Image (cartoon, rainbow, N blue to C red; front, side, top):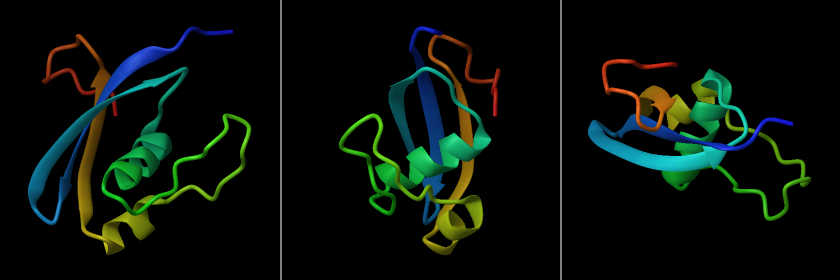
Length: 83
């Protein structure tokens, strides 16, 4: 089982830059879009780790003004974007 890592997710909300740090076992582009939408107040954060929720997709997030979602492992240089 992989240990959780810290990730930095950068995105734009209605043209304004936003950024936050999250601890997850794994992160990919789809997860980054979902968590960016949660930070923006659009997505639902599960209350329990096993709770199944509907993830916010990129097209849905873009309808709410979320764009340019990028992510990287915390501690990596800003130019070394993973997603």
